[in-house]
Image (tube, rainbow, N blue to C red):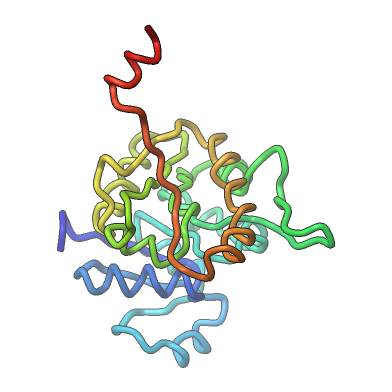
Length: 225
């Protein structure tokens, strides 16, 4: 285990939620899973032993909660958990999109899922992160050909520090973590998801991610002369 042991609730037992849960459990952290159908989710679960609770019970069981629900459903579902999520850090890893005849579009153009969640959950500290990569990269960033970048966006510095600790537990080096500022920055990171269908067509369904690189200082100096 890297760092102090964490207690994390993950809402959603689909591919992303399951992958995150197993990775954290294997590192020795405490995980609680939340599901809208806990009995069915328990029957399907094949990973290490973990409690699978109704969403409200799971949300209130840990100081750090991960939204791994489908992006198009997350706002409706989580807005009903205002009391359970009060005082907690909510790491939002979902992207809210919808399919139209013209292709994939954002569900909240001019805004973002993270902003909408912060609006309806005023007592919760929302942080957007881990939403610009294929799910396998979330827990194995060191497996990429070059260092990947994970973005953070949120209004509360303490909440972002809690998310940084979780990122570290998943293998994300501090220098790979890029704080973009307040929650409105989630508009940009969520919009990056629109390129995923094209990338899948070109690369296939492989673990790809975003990497932000900067010019070396010497190169900048030469450019500015």
